[in-house]
Image 1 (cartoon, rainbow, N blue to C red):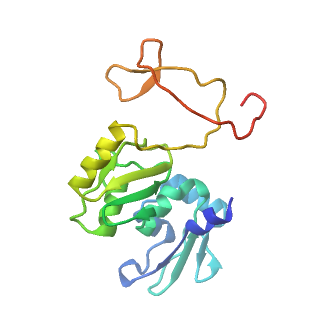
Image 2 (image 1 turned 45 degrees about the vertical axis):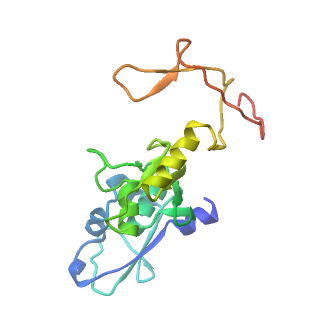
Length: 212
């Protein structure tokens, strides 16, 4: 684990009277952690209560300091729990947010309170309306460009249509990237297809491995 990953995923909670007497397991479950994530926390000894290692069955008291260290795989949950998105750039017109893997951009039936839009509204207030330029899948991590008003959204959308907005990714690939895209019927996914629309991928090899 990188040092930065560890620092970003350390969270400390000060227990209030409302949570007095709760078990650590119930408290963290209420914050949105799944049973699998709680199990990983226990196995990695990532829970301390008032500076001492603690298990999930320990009871909490008002004024306690509960600290957890999530693994780098749980960056999305760390942001949700802390209530803060990772803002890479911001001015009066737009935001650039580093979206972690596992976090949906927009709310939906499956993601009503754990999406990026909800997180940003909690940070900026209920009146904040996020307009994402482009898209990024839930299971993809990367930068998301958001406008703060309709005029900026229109300008950025026009720039995107004119191919004036460029994204660069670092990726580990297998094989040769020569394909076209075609939409699957009744699905939101895309697959390689000889009948699809032509697309261009420009890339530079940074390092080579056997078969990759």
